[in-house]
Image 1 (tube, rainbow, N blue to C red):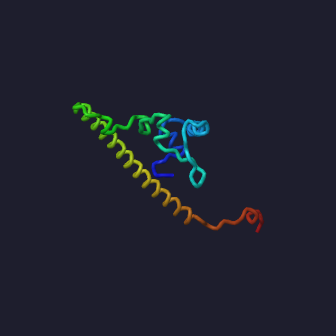
Image 2: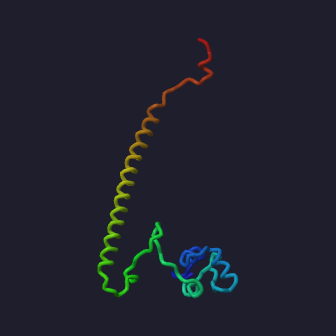
Image 3: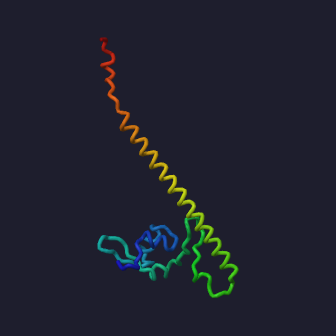
Length: 136
């Protein structure tokens, strides 16, 4: 398997279909693929995209990822400036969320340490219940 080959899962993700669809295309002969030493499928990108067009990569909230090549050679600097401002705002939001999560993690770790210390120091000896029933 070369470094640029896809396996079933990555091939499916690259074209936006399920891996079972890719496997059916291989079995039916639409796409040619080889097996690697472990028995997994190796699909060359050119062979895959001959049949299925690639999908545009997206962020977790299904927003398309903007690349410099996607902007083309237009001189529409207002749109670029607006998109740069939007990306900077999204980056600032992500940094704020990271800071919040770090603070929460620190607080939870401190609380865990306190509770562990309490559990370790609160181990007094208690008589079993059957010994408490015995009359003295």
